[in-house]
Length: 385
Image 1 (cartoon, helix red, strand yellow):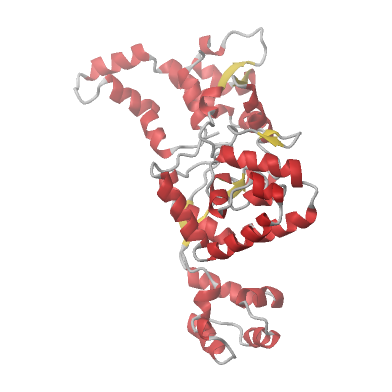
Image 2 (cartoon, rainbow, N blue to C red):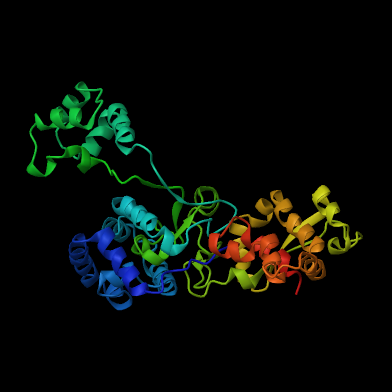
């Protein structure tokens, strides 16, 4: 539901992504992309020569790349396999997550950009070394071998034999007694990410990377979200005409033209049309009788209906109706006349009408902290148009 607010200096933001995630590997990716692109006329005609343009292209451009790829290459599995190896998300996943964690403040990451009903955040792990030692002591043979990045079964077996490792020094001492290269001197740090930052969110591909591997590593294709939206609801669906697998350029929170805020309105109406308007009822009635009300998602722009459907917003918000009914009640209790009476009664220049309104409704405060159900609250307080 929320649009991603990127830093004003978007050029430096994109440059930081290329540097932090790919670094010196970008030149090898470019070499492989050149080789593949030069061997295919369609790739040469419709896709950019510089791979960096693919990695930092704006979302509407990515949609065009996606549509072109589906049109020409969707059934060409050999090409998809080669592209999947060049744009291998699993290879860079941890670096991408680290990049978004480091930019969480700049992006105002707080609640799921799809549903706004779950908090997503970055947190600090208490004891990273202890956490990594636990993994080291419990990994299976195959998982440990992969983590050690060694081709030697003997080395992996020796490490398993030396378990348990109570300190980092215990492990490094054991590793140093085995055949190794100079780059493995501090093996513990090389196999574990000791950054204490952790993230409590998924990074979704707005455009499915399985359907179009070319956009698998594109910065503006990433949307931080909750696990329910990513893993249980959206999965490989596209944001648009998802039944026909056709995305729309304005239907991702990462798109500059995304406008769920103004194109979808949330409001209450009686579940039984014969009932009186909820606004005219005793405010306490709403909180005590939530089943008497239905929360409506009205899509002014009908294309946003796909967002409502994909993320099951009607059904999920129905469970949280009281969040909106509370503000319906507060709006009825503390109307403009009531707030003016409070200000007059206090006779204190500090407690202006605007100050009292903010203390009650916290609208400016919410604009800074982006709470769950923020849009629901805003729409209820604004009332029908």
